[in-house]
Length: 302
Image 1: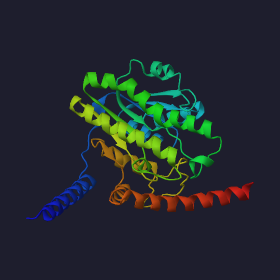
Image 2: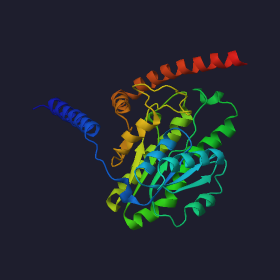
Image 3: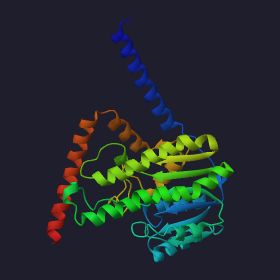
Image 4: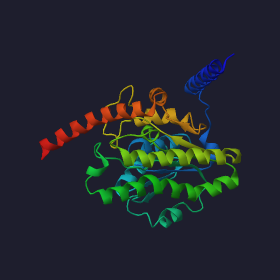
């Protein structure tokens, strides 16, 4: 066998192996009982979308919930909704603005002190109003600071709070919500893509550190989901409801990386198979169209 034939065979084996692993993970997720991790789940960004859906679903599965989000009134509404559905669930609320309160994480630390925290869902995040080049972002200094605080600092600080106790008891689950946009360059969403890329690499690095010590850490990189953040209001094949997405994602918590939903897995598999310059051009083309529509709509309202 020549060198070229050997290289070709190795490449083919790698492709077949990757495809086989992809199909297995897609069709045969390893399900776990989240109650085994501890009595409480902490969920950030928990008054809408994916965060709210996680809080409700985890309460349904028998956990008590700590809701952390910016607005006290919305937190109280979600708490009432959870307790109305699952009256055995205890619910605590902590009002905290991650984009502004970065220096006062003691508020959260005191709020969760003494709780047997088994699950942490780092979901809070912010994105662009519409896709835009980095040099044309309005109020760019404030925007950059707030996004890094909200998307990056929140994940690192909340993980640092709960991980040591999880390691001590050799049990725990941390789900850090990244994005499919954090898996590769996303022109016109550069800062968002960069912050979500941090979450993805940070989470997968911790997953390798912690799995032998009884703690699962997951990088969750969804595509579009119906929510205020995405701006999508109607569910579709590629944009499920938060409730449907979360049920699917919770079936995959043992994986260090997942998009959480089968159509998102297909999307990620396709994009990851392309050369980076091709995927960047494709994403640029799609987001340029979104940007044009947003600017047109904005001009009509002014």
